Image (cartoon, rainbow, N blue to C red; front, side, top):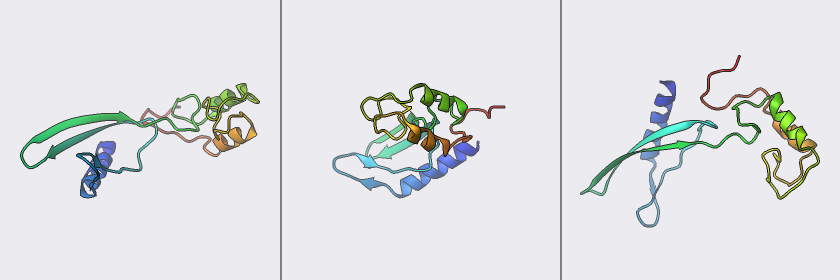
Length: 127
C-alpha cells in the first residue's frame, strides 16, 4: 500500500509538471524510483475531443552494484566480480565491469563495496 501511495504521489506530481515536446509526445520526468521494481502507471489522456485511458507497466533496471541481480549487494556479488578478475573486453562488457572501463580490477570491487549490505527492489527481506 505504501508503494501505491508513493507512486500515486509521483504520478500526481508528474501530471502537474507535464512538458510538451514536438509532435504529440508528452515528456513526464519522474525520479526516486527503486531499482529492480515493477511499477504500474495509469494514464488518462484527452485532446479535448477523444479520451484515451491505459495502464503502463515497467520494471526499473537492476542496480549496477548488484552483479548477480538478487536485489542485494552482498558477498555473492564480490565472488562474481573476482571470478572475472583481470579479464577484459569492451567497456561494460559484463556486469562485473562496474566502472565500465573494460577491465575487471580492484576498482570494480571497491565501487561495489560502497553498497555492501544494501537491498533494492520489492522482494521480501532476506533472513
